[in-house]
Image (cartoon, helix red, strand yellow):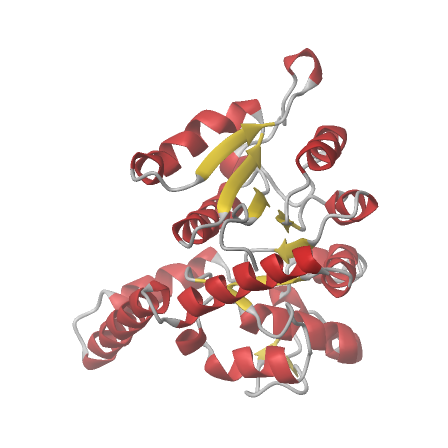
Length: 304
């Protein structure tokens, strides 16, 4: 490969909800720090707040920028930040995004699958795409095996527990604990579209790091076979694994902040994971190596 060739250009297309925007921006910053030309695609309404997030990186001369899509008549997405849900319609962004992809022809685009139209739109212009939904490997594995084995369809009530088959651990759930879109009679329609989007993609961007969930990283790679080239690309951030009620979150926080030995052990474990997460993004760390490997694979695709 010519050392003087232009850097890999990667687009990042986050969903409009705050819980999905922050990790996507962090991923873009990681790849910019590894020499990729990272462009975050957003709407005019979001561009200013995004710019604040990357200001320090730009002052350090990292190749990261914001591109606000051109929208007609100054319209924008009605729901923003934490008010956005998976039902939020972002289809007004489809044509501007496709026009930009045709014009710029990036080496790949990382897109949030909550833009439900995005996979087909990106595929139609022939740009390699990597999917992102904000989850770690655990959630991906649970979702896949729920679709594969459908254990929730074999119980008689929303409160009857069932085991999700095939996982490294005995994960027990009830239908009432499933995300709303995954429950009957909704049938998990969004989850099916997410799965189809993953299968046709260049790969999956996972919001995790290996030491956090080693068994599920291995299961994701070896049993489910969801790959990006020869590897999985991991974001250094972490996410909650399952949806739980507010009362359970409050109980967990109280346990963590308590004065007993259990609370002390929880804090020690959290501290250790924090150290491991920091190591993951440092030079020679797991996420660092994966970022470099993806960039090299994208360079190699230019020759094919």
